[in-house]
Image (cartoon, rainbow, N blue to C red; front, side, top):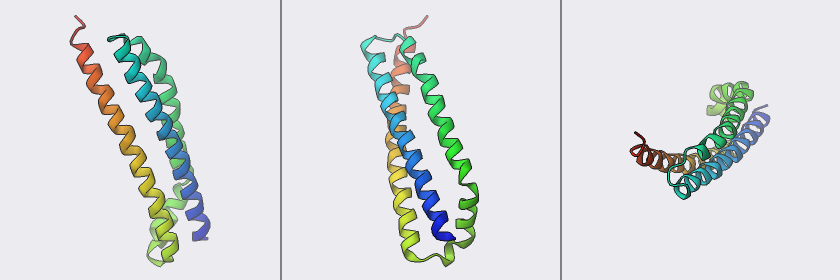
Length: 120
């Protein structure tokens, strides 16, 4: 039973990583478009909807494995090392992908702040 829960959790983490990868790509594209347009914020508006959909997909993915998360929390002390390692490996990948996305978001935020200074 714990094997299946870990499998489902790892699959969810992979799905979430794909969403964060896509969010990173969108953010980098928006940063580039903002720089090329020298502060035309309309380019940002076109990606907000896509970002919202991806963020909702991440939330939905997390919600879908709520029972597995609870099972893992209750049983992790009894889990075989192979399952612990598999889950930790998936979480490490996810942490890396999220950090990369957040770094891109911070860069975009700095750029927005820079161009907002020019707005009366």
